[in-house]
Structures are given as structure tokens and as C-alpha cells.
Length: 165
Image 1 (spheres, helix red, strand yellow):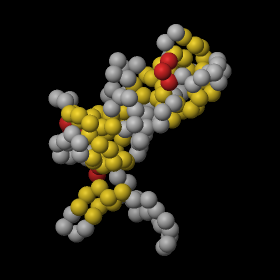
Image 2 (tube, helix red, strand yellow; image 1 turned 180 degrees about the horizontal axis):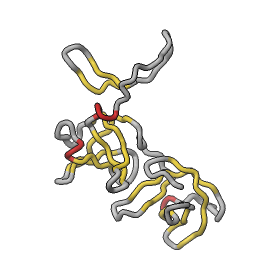
Image 3 (tube, helix red, strand yellow; image 1 turned 120 degrees about the vertical axis):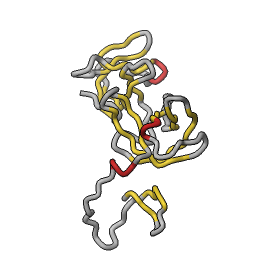
Image 4 (cartoon, helix red, strand yellow; image 1 turned 90 degrees about the vertical axis):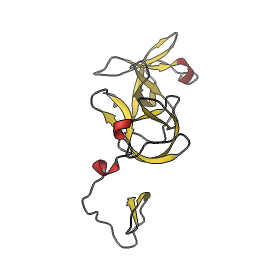
């Protein structure tokens, strides 16, 4: 089964005029549009692809790797706003939606924000939220002294900064 919002290793099952179809197991076969099909691609080849829903609600595959996937926190730039919400550049042709209800503050075009990328259970679409607290794991971590970690600053308070480790 292909995981929407994640990288998947899928098998080419057939070629078509508008692209190739990859095995989707429980879902129907997944289209990779012609523009993304690698040269010399053949039936039974295995490809690493990112799977998401396009603007027409079809499940689509692309060999491109987005800047963030479902379950990731990322610092992304707003490229536009509409009555539905803000759209972020996440490295794919289709921009990533942050619905208004998921915006901690109203987002502005040209500004960058820390967001969490999630799969909307109602629409099965990848979306983002700047309301980070509900996605944070607040269990104490078991790090060793001197252990190297990656962190991302996401908020400033009177006491200092909030970070995601």
C-alpha cells in the first residue's frame, strides 16, 4: 500500500500516453505524469516516489522529494494566500496548504514559518499547521551529555526560546 505524504518504493505496472502507472495495492494504480517519468523506464521497474493528492483529488506520484513530508516539522515560505488559507513552497509543483483554522497567526506572503506537515484525515490530503503544540512529543527525551542533536527554534517567550529537538 502506498503511503500518501511519504516516499514509497513502487513498481511500474503499465505505461500510458499521459505517463506511467505504479502499483498502489489497496488503492487503484497511481499515476506518475509523463513529465516526471525517468528515461528508459520499463514495466516492473521499482521507483522511489513521493505520493500525494493533486488539485483534482487524484493520487499522484513524483520522483521529486519535498522539503518536508508527513510527520516532519519544517521552516517553509508562504508563496500566496487565498480565502482557503496560505500556500507554502515545499519543493513540489503543487504548493502545500495551511488552512486558516491551522494558522496560529495569519500568515503573510513572503514570510517563512515553522509548520508541521500532516495528513488530513477528512480529505486524505497533505496539509500543514503552524499550531505546533498539539504535534509536539512532550515526553522527556533521553539524551546523553555531549550527544549531537538537530534543533529548530520555533517561538520566543519571556523566558527564552522554544525549540524542537
